[in-house]
Length: 409
Image (cartoon, rainbow, N blue to C red; front, top):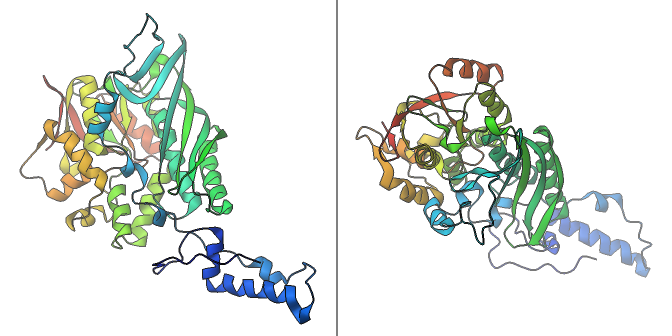
């Protein structure tokens, strides 16, 4: 017999997610409870344990993951300004007692998308980690998006995936079927990337979180780096913007199902093929656009390469519905962090509409690759991306600068 349910003070319109015995609050499951009790005590005799199949077939209602969180996806990241302060002084040149790693060719100083360790002249190992709270309600889809986002850092360095390890914080009362669905979704994306989900670690947490630690490899002389941009390069983006706006709008009930589905499709898509095309054509400057938004990650590249990134406001691709939400005043909490981080180094032309400025600051979850490509190589890169089924937009240019900065023009 199921234990008595724990009543919530304000259950609201949806089934509350608490301990597993909370399913007693849902009518079909409550009826199944009564059937079990009747089977056990029919005519005053004890039941044998062979219950009506109707009882065994009734399932608990699906949980809504986003109701367990206050913020989801990459919008939950610590702000770039606060992160820079926390990481100050932790670079690879900080050597104590003469001990250091000259073979760590990418890490915190200067910051890049992943750590890279030189194993031999022709082989480098890439390591990265990313996790966040749910951005969608469906557990499997959440696992797919979280995995695609974590895998992207290996692709943003020009590498291929070897294996991944789960990083999971899960409520004790989450149904195991839901947790398994998260893992299945993540494993499917790791396999799609050519790797294997090889293990992981879990802790108990009232707010669920999931992601991956990913290990990959690359040729040291073919890495994609944040500092690889040069004056004269064109800026290409491989996914449209607006995932943060659409997810935030969904929480407020203003994003349509069709627009949310398109955003989910974008977030589930891997950046692996796009990265392969960039590497094949000799591109050296790239990053993935995630929680710091287009302007924040553009500024990171501009600083790493000592340049100015000028974005063409009219050329920025937006997911359907994103600009409408921006015009309606929707904005994520993470966008406020991004605005503070970018503001000292940002020039915005007076003619730029505020909704476009909001879009450029919007935190992206599993966003596309931002690449700096020479004008000579750009046509072949665009053709290669198109042939591989990867969308791409030319959204700006790289200029020389005495002080690195970004601009919306």
